[in-house]
Structure formats: structure tokens, C-alpha cells
Image 1 (cartoon, helix red, strand yellow):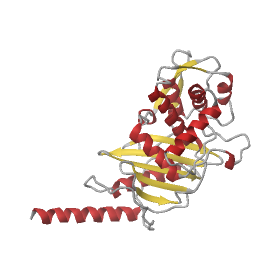
Image 2: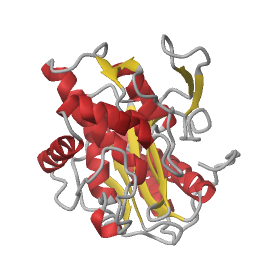
Image 3: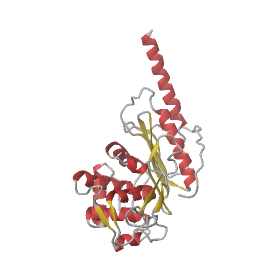
Image 4: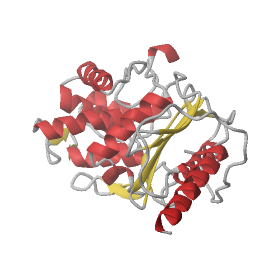
Length: 315
């Protein structure tokens, strides 16, 4: 009797997983996407996941990874002071650059600049951290690419610590990655660092000890607080990259990662990523055990779940 019940439950779980997998539906609103179970690394869905594209400000996740290595080695601490130089201050004044408007001579601890980089997507904060960690931007970018190679990101190339377009404005000359490889970075971060300590924060002020008027920071990830369990990771946008999002959510001890690149607008991106998060959790085994990494399933043209929430304002 007990064996019969167990077999029935096992069959039910398999049917639920199969039906959920078929609910993944490819779309033309993105250049590429991947949905991954963070625990096992199993790819739950992939559609053009090996297309190379600029990650825009998602690049800051690799900057965080390198800074985390420096923290672990003792080369930096969260309290290490970082003094803003002229070059860093200029980054904050660049056209269309998100920033916390760092001013030459200001001094902030590493941790405050990490919060600024991950919440406000501050390009100047990323630049300041990179210079402090490696002595120069080229040296830091070298560390970013070394880290990428160590994670098996063979198609990925970094040229900046913040994802801004390079001076030539040629896409081929800038930061490049694929959804599949970037998901590997995301998985590394959620399993080995405290990245969600920063990426889960929706609002915070910046400038304590340096400014009379503090700067408000608002996380660009509008899924926070709107989709159950979402606690990261990073948005990105440039004209060349389109709207990108590396998202993660945790429910009942299970974690899903979704990386979507090059969408035409923020709302379409966010709604589709939210949909894929729901389908990702639905496709996991109800018994909490999944096989190791497997080839992605062939997409089936079935309707996905509609996520109803409003996305205020542009990214």
C-alpha cells in the first residue's frame, strides 16, 4: 500500500514537472534567455542562450565578484576608505550615466560604494571600487576577465567595470557575454557570496559623513517586492544592449536564476522574466531533488503564466 502510494506521488510529480516545462514559451521580445535551477545548475529552459550581446550594467555583477575576492583575500575590507579622484568624478557626469555623483576628494568605505553600485547602479561607484581594488581600470578589467575564465565563461569579454559603452561606441569593442555564461556567474554569486545582501535592498540613502543632503537610491530591479522571493540581481540598459535583467528568486529553499538580454523595453522584459520565474519554480521537482545539469528541453509553444503587477517608470 505504501509503495503504491509512493509510486503514485512520484508519477504525479513527474507529470507536474512535464506540464510546467511545456509552459515555457519562446518569445521574440528578447535576444536570448536562460532559466536555471541554482542548486543543481540544471537548465530548465533556454532560448538563444548562446547569443553574444552586451550586458550593460549587469557587468557590475562581475565587478562585485572581483571585489568579493579582494575582500576574502584581505586586500580590502568593507571599511577600507576609497577617495574619489578626478577621473571617477567625471564618470558620474557622463551623459545618461546613472550615478551617485561622487565628488573629487570625497571618501567612502568600500561597503557604501558596493551598495551604490548594486542599488543605484552607480557607474562612478563601480569605477571607484575598480581603481581602489587594482590600482587602475585596465588592471581591474584584467581581473574581471581572469574571473570569467575561471568560471568557464569563454565567450565573455569585459572592457569596463560598469558596462558603459566604450569610446568607439562599437558593440564589438565593449563588454560582451551570453545569457548562458552570465547565468553561470549569477549561480556562482548566489552560492558563494552575499550578493543578495546588496541586491535585495529596494531603497537606501547615500552620502553619510560626507554630504549635508543625502542622495536617495532606488533599486532599478522592479521585481523586488512584486514577485515572490525575488532578491536580485541586476538590471542593465544601453542603446546597444537593450534592456537586460539577471534575476533570482528563492522559495522554500529552492532558487531560480533567469538571465534575459536585449529586450525592447523595461516592462516587456520584467513581465517576461517574472513569467519565467514562475514557470521555473513550477518545473522543479516537488520532492526537492533534481538531477544534475542536463541539456535544455526543446521549447514548446504553450501559454505561460501571466504575472499581474505594474512597472512604474523607465529603468
